[in-house]
Image 1: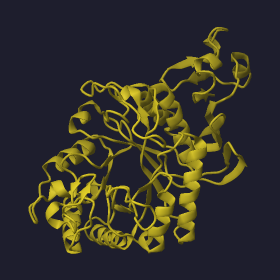
Image 2: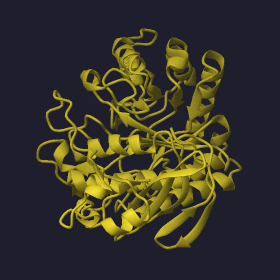
Image 3: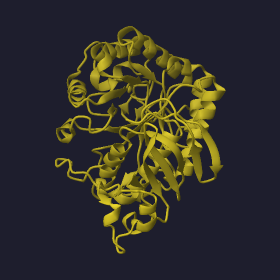
Length: 423
């Protein structure tokens, strides 16, 4: 996989230039919600999987009664991922009714789930049980999914976490202690904030010292308009919060991102009037946005991206019939982009909504470019010694075989879709 080092300088409102390389290989992961979905997944089909929200994997399912643990469904998911050589991260949390400090509060995962435990030792015991069981079979443990941080954002519902930020910092410390003791090679991911208010919530968490207990800053880059500009804005604010709190050198992982896709299910409709859930995209349009977002992430030094979700019925990358394992255009594009990036390094790169040009290097030689928005013709490509042209749908054509009716601008959907030019 590519090895990218980042040195960014602003070219303009719509693009960035990357000159040089940044630490970390591009990593494209997925969420798989159902054990049955693994039947259609080949070994190393992508780089890793995040286990979050799957039935039987949250705290309230694993320990329904104090001291009585049920890992049966979690075992199956971890084993299935391991058999396919997929790196695993797991998101902790969702308090059982018996342990909850507010057992009758209705959170996203049920009564009492969003509240912190009334006794933090119960949290430590649960985390220690999980980490001791899976040790390094799980590569990283994420502390919490999308906490609201009520000191910063007015909470309209308990969501996934309704406690104080000070309590969240303590829970993060206790995760670090359990991981260092039982799985020292595994990483701790800070609670993953999300969306437009996420940087402010992250800033508050880090200001209370939470960042020193994490190896990785997790963030969910859900975008209001699926634009590179939106992505860059969020990433810039995340980095500013990290720098302000003295942890600017820690890696950033996008542990959950995606968009609503019509071809993921039946009657997929907008859920909110504005924001990431306000628009339903066709799968080809979603593929275009996804590819640009991933390249913007690599260019910005984000070490990992996890797409949500391979087998969802609204934000996934498979067809509505999950039993077939057949990919829609978004799923094919995600697989194709990972193939393009394999075995290369990222060279000079501009990423914008309307224009993009990223060189892929093999050693000191430019192997290929990922481009969009360029008005290339067969003649100009041949003059530039481009031998092949590949599209996000996985197809590849020899440039010499293109005809006047089959030019790059036609193949690339009016220049909007990223395509690969191979030298």
